[in-house]
Length: 348
Image (cartoon, rainbow, N blue to C red; front, side, top):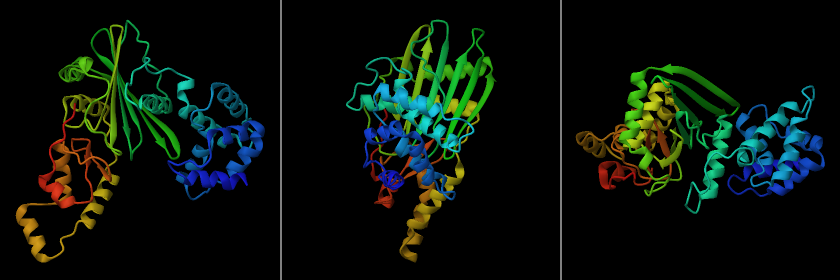
């Protein structure tokens, strides 16, 4: 029965049919039986489906501190020689990531003031823990650190940390979390004084330290959260924006990407771009000739939209880096929107 319940729960994306208490109690009552049932749901042909099954059963969002500690210790105690060892550790990592606020305090109290404040603390803490990042708060009086966290709907989360040395040069570290199968990629390198100066100048141009933590502009359901934490002379500040491309804040963060050498995967972008081309076909030769005369091309339009800080909001997303990081386009009424009938989006 339990394997069937796990499969059903994994399919209920966003509407979990079984609650935290059910699965947490199942693990506490008989962990071996739980792990055996979880193992039976694994499909050698679908790593994504396996990840969904483990996550839906093990993440236990909102679990209380005491059962969290108990289950975490039980999972850590599974012996390496056990057939259930691998899946127990996957389960433990999901549990820890989702409930990272029980392990670390990443942000000062009342950092996020909106109605979704508690959710944002849990979400961002989960991402940071998965990337194996430590809290920058409370700040050290002797450190200057900036950490950019890129949380994207359709790609893996990325963190890029720049630590400024007393001499003016710096160290850069990038972390990328590949979720399926779970793998953390790390890259580190040194920065020259000129590179550090340029990055800090862009941060100053964005008035980072005077910006509000949360923006007042529109929020989308897809796309990316651009998050920058800063520590300087004992001060800590965090700013988060949805789709910051085209803003001074976004330009500062794109500099982090350039310094790291990270280039978002282009193959998915090209595949999605080709899908748009396939969907948006002229209905007749007359329409085709009109569009050619107008210089209209769906792909080029997408890039122009991204470069001009124009976003249609939620819905299906194209993710590119050319050099703007994102371009969001509704497929509905695609033609009229790309011809510029939608007002320019303002980022605050």
